[in-house]
Length: 314
Image (tube, rainbow, N blue to C red):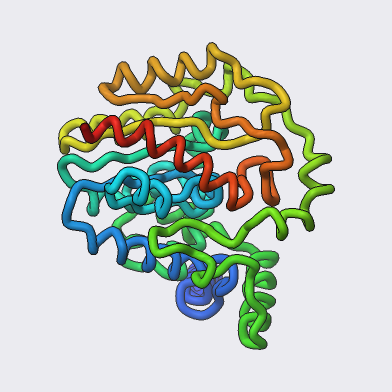
């Protein structure tokens, strides 16, 4: 009899635990803002009836690339679907697939660590708390393994963090970047050189070395996810163009690494863009991290990218 009650207690505890994180507590400042980001980006995406360019990466895609500029330079609609690097590649690709049509081009300046994404990384990506709190339909569509990882992602520390954010949101605390700082095209804006002065000491002291050749592993789970996406793109007449994320120019990105990436995309029937500077810039060009160009240089970088991407539409 005691064993039966233990089982009942476990079931009830799991139900309370799941209900708490699905329906009650959440992070409005760090997770809730992403819901607004997606709504704004997808709204613009759905308004386009012609061929388009989509930029997809982590926060480097959002801060260092500007679809607003690319659209002006090329005359082709451009939507920046980038949010953060913690999202698994699988989730990011699934998010944009329903909106891609024949003739579209997806530019992927993925952060270097995405090429080594493991299966566990994909199962425990930072999209999990967002999905659990805001995308219940998507949660139900996940396979059993992903659902289990999703539902047991949370702990006491996360609960306390949720309560803290809910209180801060209630009293009107806002983040540095919100929907108000995002362009219609989905780019981050207002992160200019003047504001960057506050982070100069941090930028100057970040330890950074160029990623080694081993950064890209063609057999990694991340590479396999990317391969599957390229196969899907080929079958649907969508062009994929890989690219390099923006980062410091303290030391050059190894030629062998960029060549391996070029060959990987080419082997899968798509393209890889390497600019002469390998998307590397002086530290003074950056805003608050090694991947975020200040707005003035975000625009300059995007103009150069636009010139290359336009060639695919001729």
